[in-house]
Image (tube, rainbow, N blue to C red; front, side, top):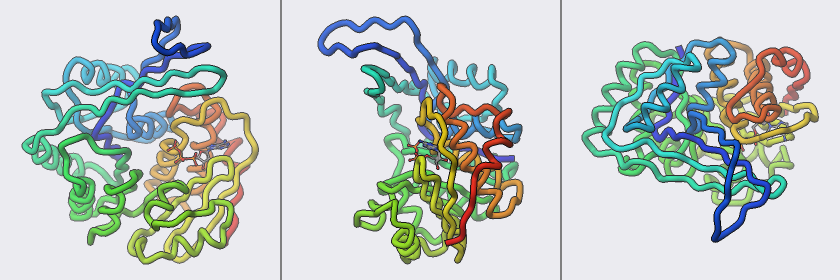
Length: 312
Ligand code: ATP
């Protein structure tokens, strides 16, 4: 099975407002609450496309219970590690014709003892997993190399790791002896790793960027390019995955949906071409829905057929 890791899950609350008024009351009629955190978006998409998944991470309090109930309702298997502190909420206000203002709680601080115990919990889940995805930033209290420790645990059990994070956590994972199988930086994250500006429209320069020794030992690098698809390195091969022009309703969570597609394609032992096509399709299908981390499986084959892969 596929195991998805969301160390800092969240109840994602969305408030649609015609106009956001500051320093006064804003009333909302329609409120949407979903089980969020990037890894839970990944989980939902994998589940919707009929693959076996289990979601894990830290969870706590009444909000944590609510989140688990939500996953139960959707039929998504989960095995979180319980902590005393409350799971966080994240608020997104969608207002003034397309603007989005977010208020993101940092979430609970993980005690050293819980961090240690989670690794044993994680080990027992690894025994049942072929591939794991690790997504998002880490909760407070964990050391910057915590994902690196998790990747080392997975490596000992020959479990493949797909890592979608940024900043110091990503850097630490790239410097460690045991590497993730795949990383999925966007233009900004790639620039941060290389300490220079990256031009996502220049594929020859991107190819050169991905040959940087910082990526040695990472089999797959998927640079997502929004409407331009993705530029991909797999071992010594380079590709551009191009996608058709589509009507975008809500692009939030498309990176997570792309990771879900990569996880399914790699898990199923598909060809490079089909892995990339699956990932581009799940990314696109997410942008075509109002809900975050949500795809319509009935449209899968139609959009899969529209993705083109070109060697570079
Ligand atoms: P996120 O901020 O959600 O983590 P990201 O920057 O990692 O996103 P993007 O490159 O924006 O990811 O999008 C991932 C994939 O989703 C793209 O490769 C593409 O398949 C699809 N996608 C995103 N935006 C669009 C768009 N405007 N039109 C068509 N497809 C899109």
